[in-house]
Length: 486
Image: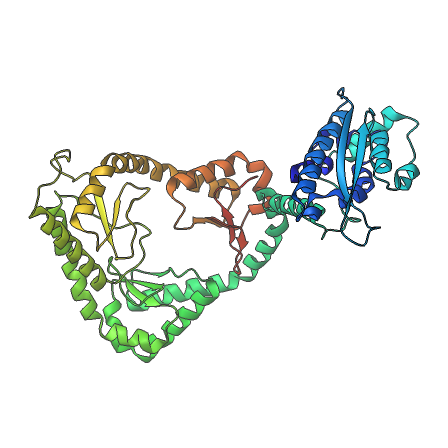
């Protein structure tokens, strides 16, 4: 039924753009009293009358569409129920509409008169003395077929609320197309970026100073917050170094990372939670040797798992959630024990190759996923029973091989395209979110380059981050989805 009503008011229908006498708004306004009288929603408790009106509206929509397209029509006799307001109790009056006219003005007048409704509005509309020129005028006026004037319509009425909502959705979708969004936001991004330049210079100065004084390899920021928070963490850590220099020797030759937790990462990096107070950082640094002991045991556990699973490589996801070494050690212990128990009962499947050295497994926490990653790794939770793990590997051997081969090719192409985009658009930086895999980044970079002349003026000199959403961060970084529409 809604489609029937929309067909009469739908701006995408050709007949609304070629009226000789009436505009789209005039047609909608003229028929509004009729729709309000016969709309099926008014007959919720009366299924017979509702069904009749719904069917007749569908036929009426089709007939008017044929008239507008100058197609021949057969005369049609339609029946509608309307409520008789002259009676104290609920009662209905039947109206019949016979349509044989071949132009929209006459058809609308017939509908209104048959319904006992006024035709004053239509009568006041002046007919064109030059139909051809007027037709051309309205074709130009409604070149944008989504441009309908809803200013005089009660947007809360059930008939029109749906149409108005769809119009708003279209407008929102247009605003979220890349070119339109950049046009509206690139100045804001430039202003924020320029204001944040002083912060970035101070951040770099603090990083260089702390790195040199403590003999660090580097300092990283991996907690997702903006430069303001990074600067605050660096200042707090610098103050801690000045107050307790005797503890800081444990950092020499290591990488310091401000992250979401405090501990030693699987790569041996010193992780400090950016939301903690300096006192907690100090306690951790004083006891760092305990964490390092777990870290030194991890290669032995990884080698043990590899030996049990036919020399498979034990790796880690590039964007694997950060965990401390002690937790990872326990995860390896669990999965190795499960596989050893399985081997005690039955051998590995015959379809397995003699060696799995060309494959890679990643062991995560009990809440981790069970999947083949986009890079071809087997991602498994540490609590997975041995039988289920063996079955999972058996089922996905071919998929893992193909994905790994694609990834090895994609990662080099991705790096190359990122460098090209930075040069072509003169970007200050081009980064991506963890969930944007190389194949998605490649598609995005290619699309950016193909549409260079459309968008270059809006991103030149900015810092661009490829993600799954639109945003301008407080430090001026422009986030755009990898699958944007131009």
